[in-house]
Image 1: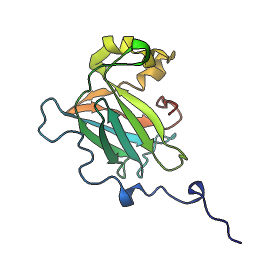
Image 2: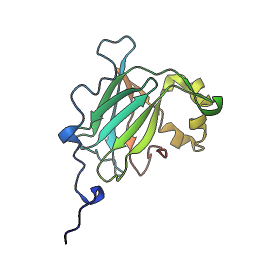
Image 3: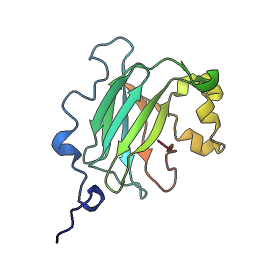
Length: 167
């Protein structure tokens, strides 16, 4: 009798075979007013690039973007800044983008958020950010300004590990 393998027993992931499809890194069309790039790197605990990951973004309005990481762990998403939204119990949230990370070594995706450095006042009021007592950990969720938008590196573990949330 042969045992059937479960997904956690197979090798992979194989994101590059089927996803993402060309153009999925564009949440909005090229040339959209106020659009920008969010670029970054997916890094493991030793600071090495994760070349076979997938970054998926979700933001207000249901807009979704996907970008595979390259040999240097780089990804890029072309989008616009979402507006602040009302959360549970009327709490206000700062503009942010939800991020799902799929990568080798993860049996389940991990979830984080990108917040914007030019929204400091809104970030200070954001109910989710304020649940993170460690200021240096909270800082892992704030993107940096880049040449054509923002830079948001994601570290899966170790020093400066990005904060991840229960999905």
